Image: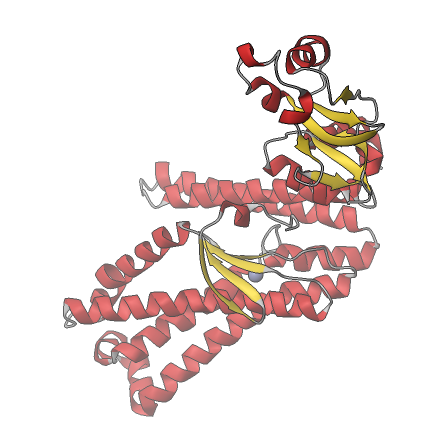
Length: 398
Ligand SMILES: [Zn+2]
């Protein structure tokens, strides 16, 4: 319902199941990355480790390892989410997507301590999983095989069972996830850890966010540079991936920073503070022809409260009026075409502006009537809130 750190989940995807009261969704981009992982394991890494494996064994192991890998990603996100919930922050859903997962954490942490704990919980889970899979693998191998791995790594690897092989891969990939996520740039977990530390030291949340976002942007550019170097100097197409990931990270760093600014500026702001209060009404017994020619076309107002018997009984929009064929407009009255207040979309004057903004923009910036009780007291569009932000930009900088 409410907009969160990311709008990504809005795009939909597949609903998997609900666990601990948190809805787990799958973005369709996961299919791409899952296929890539399974393919590269089954046709690259596993045949290299096990030249004697048949194709079904390699593909079966790759498939199982891929599924468990995504379960590990989910465990990472759940770890963030359940920790956030301990601090009283609601987490309605987790979406797994291209570069891992996103937990929709409904509000920012209130203290640096909470921010730190929530941020570090994910990488700690990945590290624990990494160590767990490694221990599992070494437990199944026995001392002799372990010693063999040091003396003759290739021959010993080739003899390992599919389960042990999968555990070794899962262990190392989870360890890598823990380490990568701790890089101190927004929007990675390490960026949040970094922000919590600066916040704790300076007491300035905004400064801490700006520093973490800047670090995130530099980090993203660094990865892009590495990608271009791979592409043009080493002539390796793999560099394209790095360019893409780096671009994505630097973009996310900027986006999450400006989103935070918007959220902060709109904090404590009600719909009543930003709605339009200068607007006209139309009587309910006016004909549609009269309404279109003498009201609608004489004003830039898109939505009109309709008045009958001294009070507002509904609203009529440009779209509703112009949907009636020109030839029938003289014979029909506004009250026949309007939406009554009970049936139309209205927004309460006390609603939070930041919540209203995402709802309004999602529905294509159509104007909506603002009500107090059953009275229409204003009109609002998503762009009105954006205009408010532009008009108060100096307040944002301070
Ligand atoms: Zn994380």
